[in-house]
Every structure is written in structure tokens, then in C-alpha cells.
Length: 626
Image (cartoon, rainbow, N blue to C red):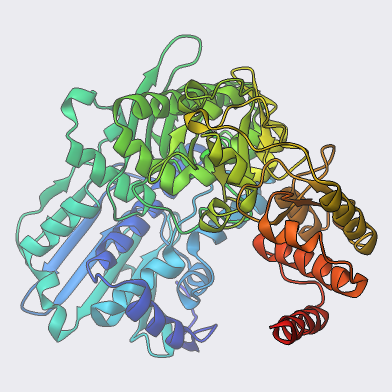
């Protein structure tokens, strides 16, 4: 029996303020508290299931893991109890005393230290989800007894700054596991009613891998709310769409409906079952720097880890489970990382996910369009990273284009609509689809009815530089090198303007090149401009304009190369300027045209003061002439 006494402690990390933020900002639906507490109970049961592999005595005579919900409407209390791993005093203080940590993390650290390896990793939400109980309760009591221990402890708090931990008699504690008692607020007494509890469990926790029973009032018989059966092990014909949705919400911690459900069993050399979901909306951690997946690994229906990399990082938005009987139950994280079996499963699961997405794109364009809107930017990472599947991913990709006023087009559609003598897939990249759609570099392409891909995701500049072709057609930026559009006819067979440049305009271009020599590589006549006077393009043998910006911003190159200033020799302003002989005016005009091209490219004039002074001089000159 312990000789330790009760102890009061303050919450760490300003928990009172964080609780207020969570209750009023993070969780708008109070029903979620029950899902969080059931999830914690299920995690504790799965921890015990894993530890009992090496230490079967931890289970004792109580072999059936279960979660029990007990309501007392008259007293206004609600109990959520499990016979899982339980907590020691120190584990209780660490797990429930801070929001920043969780019992699950401590469990992983203990396993790694004690056994010299990391196993049974489970990213739970005990440190955060537990506190959702204070949305409905003005006092919470937790009694826990760790499996194999002869001590039990009581944690209690009103969630307002302090908590108390005290020893409790074994007769008043569960034989093993944890019992959470909520003293419900006046406006939350409905959470002690049977129909409310049944509804929440059915909607949010119906498919946790541990049976759930309900005792609706003291002395009542327990009724089963969930059987704890592995949904993925059932025949698909016995699973309803609602069953899949409920399981998805449980495993993914999402509240939306899945856009796609992929459930299959692989047989042959390697046998495994996968139940995977494409979320209906973007998970909050989609663009985390770690870019880790969220697929749970089970071995013979025993949870092992949710850090097995079953899918490449560009499919990290997929949620679900993989269950195999071909691995030992005591598999470690190191074994998982180096396992040829897991590599084979990863290849099979990845191929199946991409195959199902391809099928969905063909059979249900609207659903796939929503998936692409949410996750297209992530999937395109694979075009850059996954050479083996590049062709398949390019086939999946959908793009905004100059030919699609709304919606997106596939590359297959693009190639099918190539213009006469068009030999490349043209694109323009930038950080804003609306702005790049109005870029002057597109004018000559529009005049010829040439479709151009509008690439506005940061990853676009990377994959398009590494994807040499699609169906034999190379990718070519409209902001790089010469446009060379002369062989492609204008729309309606219009007569193209003369390609000859007058001597006066040639002289103007030469003068501009001399004036701007320190800032540009060349000044040349353009065949891509029809309405605008000027634009900037990159040299043929370097990165295009947007890719160069990204490389410079990321420190991959020290500075951007000098661009080429293209001038429309048929533009009325250029023709008029060719007749100006005043060198000072020509110098001002040359610099203003360069700054104009920069602005059209989404940049700023390099010297705002000089830009303003030049503009003022030309305005004054125009007023004097009038």
C-alpha cells in the first residue's frame, strides 16, 4: 500500500487559458467530448493488448477488453470506464497535468527506454482530447490503476487552474484501467440520457476496435452499443455507406464525409487488408513540414503503430488502416522501416490508391474534381518525386488553362486539342492564377487559339522542370526563350502581321539595349505580343521566370539572371517612340518600359524614386507639348 498523500498542483503551460481557447474555439460541438474520451479508452485498451504480448500476466483473469459508459441522470454524472493499461501516479500527473503532452507519448518513450526499441507507437489525443470533458462538466474525477500494480490513484479538477492527485483504496478503484467521472453542468444534463449517448456513440465511435456497452442508470442491465469488431475484416456486402463514414470519422478524427473509400484484400505472396479513405476536406496538417502519412498498421487486428509509411508523402492525406497477418506481433519500428514485406505492401497499397483515383476520374468527374481541388497541389509533389509513377500521376493531374473558363482539364484533353503544327505543351507559372491568366506573354498564344496551362501552385515550377514530356510532347514555358509561333496559324485564318521590323524601331531597340545593359540580357522584337508593348522572358537555357524566383527566394541560387525585354514592334506607342530623337527622353522611356514589364510580371520597379521621377518628367513634357 502506498504511503504517499494527496497533492495539489497547478496546471502547466497556462492550461486555464488554453482550456478557454479550446472550449470556445477548437470545439464548437460539445458532443465531441464523448468521442475523445472513448478514443482515449480505446487507446489504453490497445496499449494493454500490445504489452500483454510480452507480459500475458497483465491481463490476469480479465481477458476481454471493453469500454463501459454508465449514466446517472438523477445525480447528473457520466462515467466512461475501460479495463486497459491504466496509469500510475507519475503517468497520471504527466498525462493529465499538461495540454502539451499526452499519455501516449509517455508510453512510447517508456517502451523505447525499457526495451531499447520503439514499438506500439500510438499518437493519441489524451493530453488535448481529455480536456474537452470540461465543456460539459464542472468537475472531472479520474481513478486509474495500472495493469500489474497494487496502487490506484485519483485525479480531480474543476479545470480552472489546479488539479489534485491522491491515493485511493483498491476497493474503490477498477481492477485494472481507468474510470473517468464527469459531474455534468446544468445545461449538459442531457448527456446522461440514454438516447443522447446512443446517438453520439453510433455517429462518432461505433467502430472503435473495443466493445462499448451502456448502463443507462444505476442497477440497469448493460446494453451493447458497439461490438468492437474490425470493420475492415467484414465482407464489403455487409458494410453500409454509413458504417464506412462512421469508421472514417473515428480513424481520421474528421467530421466530414469521405470523398472516396478504398477497401480491398490482397492475397497471394503477401496477404493484407486495407481500408482507406480520401477525406472530404483538407486535414489541418496537410502541409506540415514532416509530411507524414496517417495510416495505422494492425497485425492480426492488434494495433502496432500509426507511423508505418504505407504511402508516399504525396498521398499523405489518405487516412485508414492496413492489417496483415504476415508480421510478428512484436515487430519494432526498426523492423517496420527495414521490412521487405512492408515495402511490398507499400507498393501494392500505393498502386491501388492511384488506380482507384484514376477510375474515379473517369467514372465520377465531379467527385474527382473535388478531390483534386483539395489535394491536387499535394499529389503533384509526386510528379517531381516519384519517377516510377510519373506518367500515371501526369494522367491524373488536372489544370486550369486558358481554354477552361471554369473547371480544369487533363493533359490528355490538352493533347487532343493541339493546334496545327503545335509540338509542345505550353504553360505559364506564377503565384496567382488570375494574374498569370492576364499576362502579356499569352497574347500571341491566344491569337492562335493555343491552350496554355495556368500553374499557380509552388510545386508546379519544380515538377514541370523535371517532367520532360507527356505523350511525346515536351513542356515549354511561355515566359522562357523564343516563342517561335510563326508556323501555327492565327484563328479564323487571319493574315499574320509582317514579321519585318522597321529600321526606326530597330534603332530604338538598339538604343534601349544600350541604356538598359546593366539590368537586362537583351532587347528584341517579340512575336508573342499582340496588344501589350513589352514583356519580360527568361533565356532559353535557364529556368523560367517563376522557377527562378522560387530558387532565389529559397537560397538555391544567389541571384536571378538578367531577363530579356521583348518589345512589340507593331505597337503604336513603340512606333511613335521610334521617331523621338531626344536621348534623355529615350532613356526615361526605356527604363519606364522595363518597369512596366516588371509590374506586369508581378514585380515592383527596382527603384521607386527613380521610377516616379522619370514618370513626372514625361508627364511634364507631354503637358508642355500640349
